[in-house]
Image 1: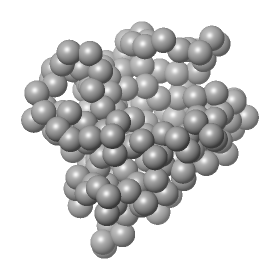
Image 2: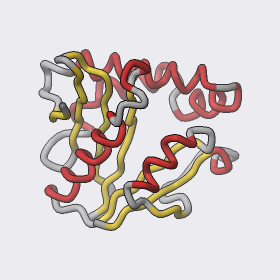
Image 3: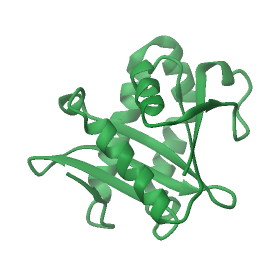
Length: 166
């Protein structure tokens, strides 16, 4: 089941999932560790975790949880960019939920919510090493594109950028 996270009630579990996501990236391989620590240094990430309910607040953003048997197995979120663009961030499924279709279900829910919220385009990026995520986004209709925001020097080659017109 996918649902909109309720703040402040669900904040702790969303933060827990986001920290697991960061740990997953850091443990994936040495190159991913470097990129994760560039984009998500621990102190800055801690600040971001406190700001999640504001950065992804309704009505222009959303934080979603996916649960199995009443237990959270993943999360994902969107936040507004310019005009009618939104960005998907931190889509993560715990190991217990991988391979079950949970990532697809969560991603579809984020896309559907973006459409309901009046967005015309969904943007996202993922790591070049997360080929499963790339296949999922392409299956959902996302098209490859170039960067849509400023990046730290030397990081672009480690990322794949996508857009979906709604």
